[in-house]
Length: 249
Length: 317
Image (cartoon, rainbow over all chains, first blue to last red; front, side):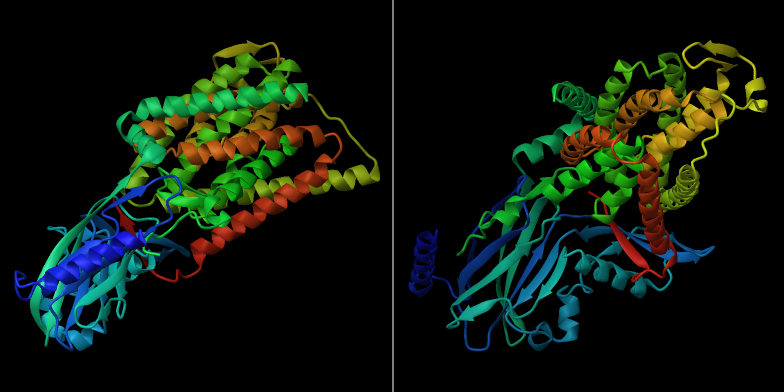
C-alpha cells in the first residue's frame, strides 16, 4: 500500500509543478472511499492527503459531514425524587457525523464572524429546530446537542491534526468511530490564505454495512416478521440440541 | 502504515459487531455473562431474564435492544428446561396452555405499550423503574424467605402445612379441572396471571418465572414439583411471541447478541442443574437474592442521583 501512495503523491507533485496546472487549486485523495461495516468493525481511520498551491502561512481546514437527519435532545427533570425525561427538542437536518480538522487553532485562522458565516465550528453549523415547536433558552439546547454529540464521538474538533509540508502537501487522518452511521459522507477541504478562502475541494466517503452484519440488518428491516420467527426457531433448536447433547453426558 | 489495521492483535479479534445494536461488543464477555446466568437458572430454577437485561444495559446495549434480544435468548434455556422436566413428568400442560393463552395476549399488549413508551420517550425510565420495583420486591422476599429457611434447617424443624390455602380467588366462575395439579379452579385466574406476566415479560425482557412461580404456588395453589416445569413451558411461548412481535414492530431483536447469550446459557443451565443436589438451595437463594438487591440498588441510584448531564440525545437511524 505504501508504495502506491508514494506513486500517487509523486504524481500529484508532478501535476502541481507542471505548467498545465491551474493556479489556486487543491488536489486531494483518500486512502479509503468505501468503509465497510462488517462483524469485526471497530471504527475506521482514513488518510486524507493531497497537494495545494500554497504560500507560507496558508491554512487548511477539513470538514467531514455525515448523513443528516433527525436528532432529538431530551431534558431530565426531578419528579417525585426520580429523574425523568420531561422536555424535548427535535433538530432536523442534523449531521449524524461531523468532524472539523485544521492545521492550527481555528480561532487563529478565522475570526468569529467569518466562522459563523462560513458555518465552521460545531455551534455555527446551520441546524434547524423542527418548525412548530417553541423553545425557551434555545442556546442551552444547542449546547446540549453539541456536548452530547461530542461525548458520543460522532462529532469532533481536531485542531492541529492537519499536517502541512513545504506549503505544498497536506495530510490528515479522519477517524470514524465504531458507532458511526451508514451513508454518504462529504469531505470538504478548504484552503485559506490570510483568512480568505483560496480554493476548495469536495470528496466523499461511503459508509455501508457489509457481509453477514449487513445481511442480518437488511433482513431484520425488510422481512422483520420472518426474522423474528427465525430467531425463535434458532433458539428452540439450540435449546433442544443442548438437551440432546447433555442427556448423554 | 496508511491503512488502519483492525487485525493487528488478538484482543481486537474478540470483538464482534452487533448488527442491530450497531456497536461492537466483547464476545467472550457476553458468552460468560450468558453462561453465568444459565448457571443461576439451572441452580435455582429462576433468574434468567431479570438479571440479564439489566446487565446488558450496564454493558451499554440500548434498553430496547437488550429487552428484545433477552426475550429471544430465553426461548433456548426454557425449551431445554421443559424437556428435562417433561421427562420427569413435572409439567402440567393443561395449566400451561391456559397460562400461555393469557401470556400471549399479555405480551402482545406489552409490545404495543413498549412501542408507545418509545414514541413518547419514556421507555428507558419505565424499564428501569419497573426493574427497581420488581427486583427490590423479589430480592427482599427471596432474601427473607431463604434466611428463614436457613435458620429453620439449622434448628432442625421442618413443618408441613396444608396442600394449599383456599381464598376468594377460588370462588370465581368458569371452573375447570386440572387433573395433574389436582385443582378445580376458575379458568379466569390463570388467564389473568398469564396476561399480567405477559405484559411484564414484553416490557422488561424477562420470562416472568420469578413472578409466575410464586403466583402459581400462592395464588393457584399448584404442587411445587410442577411449578418450574409448567412455568418454563409457558415462558417458551411468551418469549417466542415477544420476540416475533418485537422483531416485526420495532426491529430491536439482535440475533447475534441473542445467539451468543443463549449458547452460553444452555451450557450454564445444564451445568447448574447437575449441581443442584450438591449445593444447598437456601444458600444459593441467599446469594442470588443478594445479587438481585445489589442490581436493583444500582438501578435505583441511577434514577435518583443527579445525572451528570440533564440532557441526552437520541439519534434516529
